[in-house]
Length: 214
Figure 1 (cartoon, helix red, strand yellow):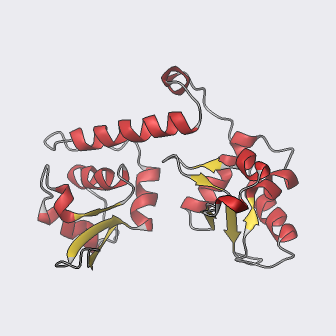
Figure 2 (cartoon, rainbow, N blue to C red):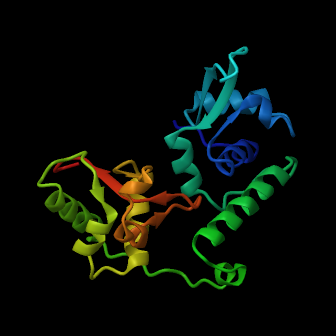
């Protein structure tokens, strides 16, 4: 039987999510992380822990991070209740910071955000069309990089919001990997126009998918 996070567990998951999914444990001390919550989330696979040596060369520091399972859980339980006894101020503050980043990156106003209308549900065959287009662009090879600019061109009839939603769903479900171009010299005007912004406001220019049948 799988473990279902409790309201207090979800507070910690969201605290990690709003700061990017990773943090030294010592930086999560306001409020201090309950050891029981931390241990049961790790045991259930929602978080991971790693002792890392800082760049200063001093004593190793314990880091907490969201696992892929943790990210997927939050994506599917965005409205699940949080503990009323927990201090959720860090979660709210983190959300507001990420909201500001998202609005700036997408040139949106706060009114645009609150007045947004629901996007239409993508057609059921869209994931398969994405796979087919990817394999066509990659000459049938899996796990090679394909520019989103080329993928968008191959699926020009698909509304951009629907395609973005489908790509993000493939990524959060583990079927695709989205990456950014880190070398500015590689980023063309087509890449800038075709960029996909993640919910956290991070740009993505490339997609990797598995081989046929993935």
